[in-house]
Image (cartoon, rainbow, N blue to C red; front, side, top):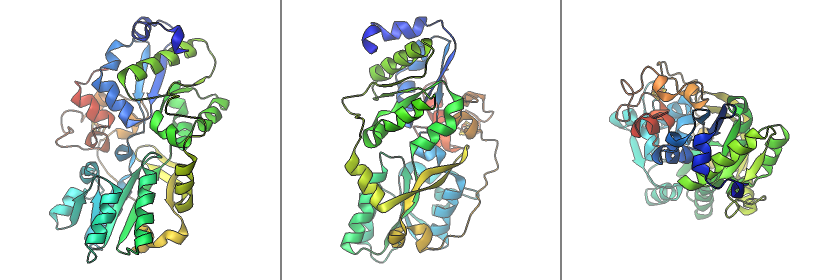
Length: 349
Ligand code: SF4
């Protein structure tokens, strides 16, 4: 398909067909689209929506409350990627918990967290396991390593999510998806074919500016033809079967569960949790965390941003009360979040 579009940039600039809404569902795509100034070259008839693919952005308030509970009430050492530390919970963020004496350690991988637990047997170490199909295998590997080494002071608090449920839930918000290449390198493209059978269109692509622009051109051209479509524009990395070994490993340790997506709500079977036989490594079970119905009462409109109902700068707090130094909502915390990217790269539409 791409061969028939000799100059994708010019094609996208000159497009004058029906209006089209395209959702990139991956935070890495969001970041690259802003960084490369892709929005600037698009015809006004093409609208990009930054969807729910930033794991920090969709992590619900109740999850932060659970982590704060473990840190302050159970005295656990929380190990986490840095972005999550500043995400607001109902009462406080993990940074707030740290100010109250909690032990919050920033790590760069779940393997680091497991190693920390191994080196600090006197501490109860919990790793905040958030992310999509791309990172879940590494979380599982950390659990497997702890299990094999007999490390019993390590567990994970799961908020792992899977994309297919989100594709269904967000389908009415856009005309086509830019599917994330790294997710489909793991799960393959059958799910995209299944979506196509339901009338949902999309193109799998990689993460360079050229790859994204080519994918957009394919989407716009196919959309103009008036029929649902799916194209794998990243065949050097993504195959129909994906990575069966990674899928099998995750499946051995984890099972699907309903998951709450910040701003969107509960999507059935869109999460992953440890199977019962690994309950000793499941912080939620190990510490019998009570049900925490997290509520975050602010004017933050992350949910509407994630669904493309508003642009970040239409939120009244954008750039004023809410900025990367003082984020009010999760979409401003993570560099992959739409509000943060919008702010960082000048708020271009
Ligand atoms: Fe939420 Fe801030 Fe984005 Fe507004 S600008 S939607 S408060 S993250």
